[in-house]
Image (cartoon, rainbow, N blue to C red):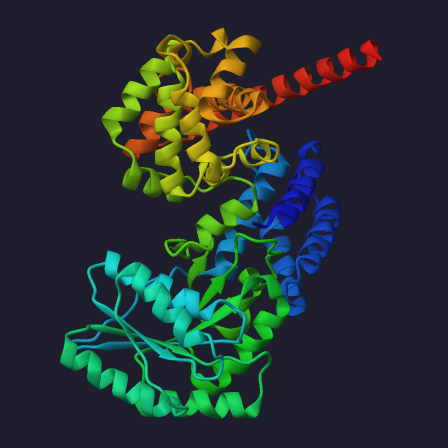
Length: 475
């Protein structure tokens, strides 16, 4: 998410880090690069123009603390302006009493609207609601069946009818929700490949018939300014209450996230960060600004960790790492828990300064089953002392697990690298993981982990150089 934009912002900040102070000249140079980076990320031109102007004024008016370098000052200024651009925070869904609260989803075809309806329903269930999904997309043949399948997977009721009258289906679904005790109705309406008058007339008729309490536009973030332009059109016809951005886990350049609030004036409510039905997050501008600038998202990480990990178990794990007794059983247990958080790569990307370390970490969460088979084929001693596993042991383990020896070698390599990374997270003083899982995070902890991350990166680079030299000499 936003890797290209993050790299370009960091390049700008590095160029300022060697300057003695902030001047109008070096601010102008920096803003030229920032403007280029934002335009390449498909951010709306008017938004880019206003953003650069605001950053320049803030930078020139800033009082630079002697202990800070110009680059550090610019990080703070740009972070504040990004937060203001995408904010304020507005993730609240306004429920009515008596219900049901009617939420209508609108958007173009292919934006992930039906899947988002299911994700939103799952989110509502987690917050104590009893939602009813309504299959009111009567234009796309597979939409009704898709919503039924998703509803069945989640154990959430889905209302549908045969026919082509979307207004009738919407009205009847509200009546059904009242009779069956559902307190929220989520309407999945029809989309088109592009905005046209027929589409707008139909969706406006549905909105008029059921007077939804909230109308959210579902936008594909990978379409950049096209998403923003469609949001503007929908807002003029429907009076949107918010936007849900999808596919932010893909190759999103960031244009939609940085532009849609400024162009429509409507808040971003939620973001979709994966294909699974639990991959929806409340949108927090300050956290997103931190991710864009490569500073991680510690608050979100803490929230996810507290949902899946036990604080006492975290302390035990840290003690094992400190004693050097962290073995394959511990590794496998942590992988299973981390998978529930979204995967180790996604988790570590939220750590300050750790995103770059994840690019070449060979760890596929879908291979947890194979990992279990390999670990269970090891002896108890091998699990506790992984360094004992030589070539002959790898062949025996591979035979027992039904895999190839190179699969065992790959797991051992992954374990070693992950152990080093987890050790870096612990901070070497029972500070990192305990603070993470208990919420007691502070800047000293973050700084220590960033330092450890840089050391790991340097060691990995040295090892790669040594391996390349060895191959060259053998040739």
